[in-house]
Length: 200
Image (cartoon, rainbow, N blue to C red; front, side, top):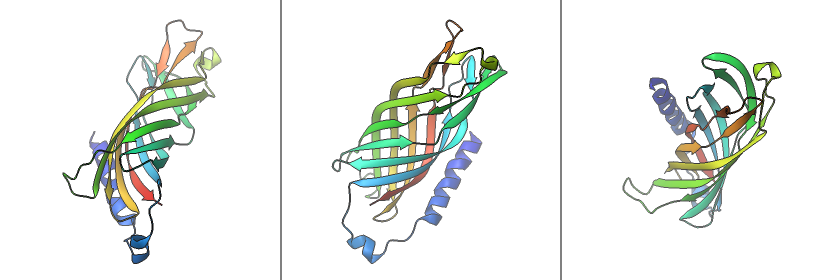
């Protein structure tokens, strides 16, 4: 947990250092409904009999604002490989690609000032599972997973374009193990993220 706190603190400091200062051109520019986010995400998988390793992964998100209250976010990353253990013993690995689509609600909240913009979101995750090397190829995973996802987070505006983003997601990702009745692999991660938001 200390390492996780250090990760968040370092990422926020880096975001403050990298974000450009607002200029007159940006201040005068008209707003667009589109924004993007680049996040560093710590994927904390659930701890079960079949254990999937935790990972720090890159995350890229595309956001479309319908209005000041509602928006949609598409969460993307690159294919991820996870080592798998059964009762503490390594049994192989698999890869997955887990895009997630979320509908976000942004409540009116100026408790911490106008720069603070919180949100909650809910949606669906579709995960492709491939390249399994489990138990020497003796067992296979179902090749996809569909499950719900939820999130809470906030943007802290640095200027008209840039904001620091802090986000927490819970995603249900699981797959039955073919060849072993009653056994499944559940990733079901908590995803702790920090990053930068850029609004067009």
